[in-house]
Image (cartoon, rainbow, N blue to C red):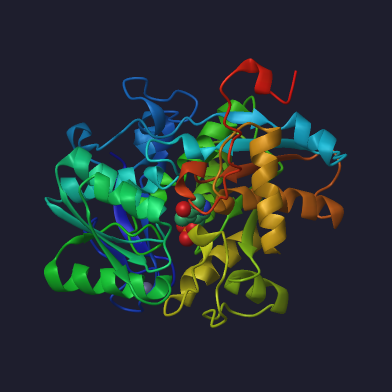
Length: 405
Ligand SMILES: *Cc1c(COP(=O)(O)O)cnc(C)c1O
Ligand SMILES: [Zn+2]
């Protein structure tokens, strides 16, 4: 195990690898640091540890000491698929790929950060975890808690899709719906973690260990793209740990000499809740979103009220990588969802599909150049989304009644 300490991203204060949630000197976001020279010497990406499967093959670059504390359900190693029919449909000059993150065990990419956070909590001797979530992180936390034989308390906004609540309850979690937007649930989880001493596995930047799990798709893409990295990676963004984590993973690849090129990291939000897009367009710091939120992309409707600095970190990473922030209208979100389903054959929740919708928009405005290879992260499963109107199938009794041939 090569993780050595926690470092504040703002003031660089250092802390031991304990269960800490922010810098006690400046309130900044903490990050796991490693003895990278020793870790890289093992060639952890070129020669992953085959004693483990999925994401944990890369365990040299993850912060868990002892293998027996790893809490896994087989997350990671999701398929990378070329979307040829979408390229045709859009007359696109890009090589469009999708990463099928909905195929993780609980149906979203949140299994990656949650597997790491719950493993560290287990290693530190916790028996109870708490999570604030727009739905998918709560389902993931509940699943990994069940796997680890821990108790799990979940706070979700009232507007959370019932399918995500049912899933968390089915794994045995105690679920509370908190009135107001996601930021109110976030405060509730922080309060309980500090008051009752439960481990907070909320998958924003509050738990410094969870974002380490978000590095792993960068290593997977290196292998899946034929020992190369794509030109652009597109990610649905609430606060943005998947984007920040993955960029850290790509920087590892560069520091190991495996690539000299880093992808442009592109964050996608919806017009109904776009605090980071707003800051990007105005060249300002991120401000908490105060507008009314009505969107089918509930997984990314995070107004960042009270933890605006999470948005600043994501925006800094986007800019450093040469990427951009972009938002979609509700119509564009729904069109993207149907495109994923009908032209790729993956069942996807609208939140996850925004990363594909953004490709169309950014090719049209010239940000994505002809010949680029793009990878859109389809972050959540279609089963998570209950607000579809089924077309009632025709009831028949014999083949004579078929209206097709
Ligand atoms: C959580 C989530 C995201 C990303 O949200 P962050 O707040 O940036 O972690 C994206 N898509 C889906 C489906 C999610 O559940
Ligand atoms: Zn600090």
